[in-house]
Amino acid sequence: MSEEFSGQISPPFLSEGSDRDLGLDSTLQELPMYNFPVEINRTGMEVANFLEKHPLLPGVILVEQEKFIGMISRRRLLEFLIRPYGQELFVQQPLAVLYSYARIPMLLLADTTSILIAMQLSLKRSPELLSEPIVVQTASGAHRLLDVQELNIISWQIRGIENLVRYERSQARMIQNDKMANLGRLVDGIAHEILDPVSFIWGNIIYVSNYSQDLLKLIAVYDKELPSASQAINQIKEEIEFDFLEQDLVRSLASIRTGAERLKKLVTSLQNFCHIDEIYPKPVDLHASIDSIILLINSRLQGEIEIVKYYGQLPPVYCFMGQLNQVLMNILSEAVDTLLNEAVRQQLHLEDATVVQKPRIEITTEVISQEANNPDAPDSRWVLIRIADNSLGISEELQQQIMESFALQTKTGKETSLAVSYRIITARHGGKFNLRSQLGLGTEFEILLPLV
Image (tube, rainbow, N blue to C red):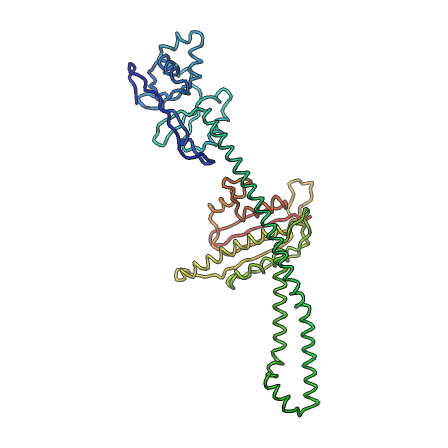
């Protein structure tokens, strides 16, 4: 409210701030701030006497007919008044005259500004301005004064909370990593226990097949040498349906062999996926790793998604097999989820779809060469793994969010599967992880591993 020159200055009002606990996302509007506007026609002595009565007041907001003009801090005002001839020059003069000499750059922030960001902006000021209060503008257009010391104390408290949260997250991550490692060892042990009897079946099915063929040959010779079999033998043949048994026995043994072979591959794939990496990378057959992951997710394909493989000639690649398997699982699972969801939507809106295309994932591998930045250095060779689908694609906004999640530090601390994959490829393997997508054409993930 504007004041007449002869009236009294209204006392400053200090907001109490928010009652809730301050956190990493807290803003300036949750801090206590001074609401103390003073008309610019007031004299310097009036304001100086008022500041003497209120020692915690960091300064005054200058207004002219309720319109914001600027700010003078307590320190800046007192500096001018204690100068030689300062009282004779400024004491009885309006604040407008004093402000014309004491005007300095001020930090003006919206009340929706994060406390931590405000602290960073405050510390970026020149050294002589570090103690100056901050002017905060509210949503209604009013202006408040924030004591920089109050901001410093609160920001350091929040920093302590942030460090505590980081510590708790690191502890939780360590516990989770240990749990996953124990789970991997448990699954690996169970897979080993399953693989032993499967190996027995697989190893003996060949002998059982040969023995059955020999017995059938023997029975055929008996039939040939003794064409007139006894009634008891003919009765038993009818009871056991010998003609059907002779034909179905071969098919049954072949089916058992196929099932044992499939189970053996599945258990071996599970062992490879749960592989616990050692300190140093080891040579890995990437095609075998990809095939293992496809076998593990085969039940989710439901016969609706076609996987096409274009494998090139790849040498063994030195990498951490367990982590690389996790990356392949993350990408393929992401593609399968997207395609299955789109297939469901197409079935629900079949009448609106002009062309219904079969969901498809293409996996391409090859060795490529890339020119080095240094002309004297030899060209580098990379192993390329490209996983592309024919989904509806990802919008540019969502692609930007995914790329931002690849940053080393995230505000939420929750990492997506793609962010984890990015770290494994770039940080652990010195490779490259690229994402390309176009609406209506599909999404493509590209993994580049250095060929050593």
